[in-house]
Amino acid sequence: MADLAKADWSDSDRVKSIADSYHRRYGDHFWKELVQLVESVSIHTLGDFGCGPGLFLRDAVKEFNASKIIGIDASKEMLSYAREISLANLSKVKVELIEQDFDKSRINLPTQSVDLGFSGYVLHEVADPYDFVQQIYRTINFKGGYVVYDFVSGNPDEFVKIMSEGHMDPEKARKRYPHMCKHSISDIEDILIREGFSGTKSVQLDPIRAIVLGIKGSGQ
Image (cartoon, rainbow, N blue to C red; front, side):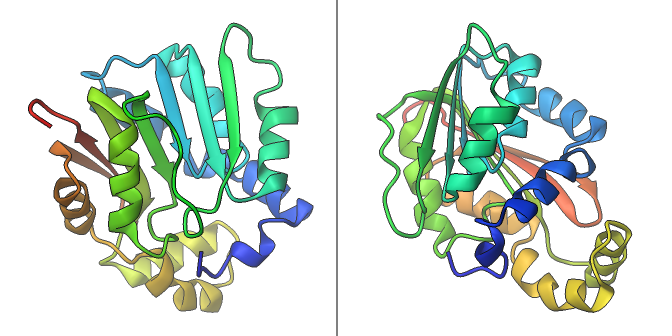
């Protein structure tokens, strides 16, 4: 992936930093809105496309009572953290972790094998978001869903303010805005619809973040 952060993904301090900041990015407000957004989806198998250190998967098991979780990420170090720390104490849940760079190889999960797919802060990183979503669409079960959680464009000043409060240097935040906030909510919805999803719904959590859901509907 041609992104600004990838060089750090194999660094143990970077991995720990991402894990430590998890609750700032996936707080109670996020979970409340996500659970309401996907209430129509029956979730047995959950796939996290860009799972990082696996903390979302850990919490998703509790929220959705999933019986199988799949995490895919480009970083060995992230997957090791997920396997050895985040997901180590899960019981009665089948866990599958896969190392993959989405820009270099195709998603190789079976067709219609995932009830709910999720990507957190990933869509802005991939080189071709349309192709990425198309690959995920193939893996989603009929009446299943795919959720994109990402930064959204439209308010660079708020982005700098909020990221600065999260201990990012303001100048660095301003430079990163065009990369991290590539898409508006409408852009993300359009990508999902173009690649086959329907019934899109979205929730803007704050001025710079949103959750967008697409459903794999009838006749598709």
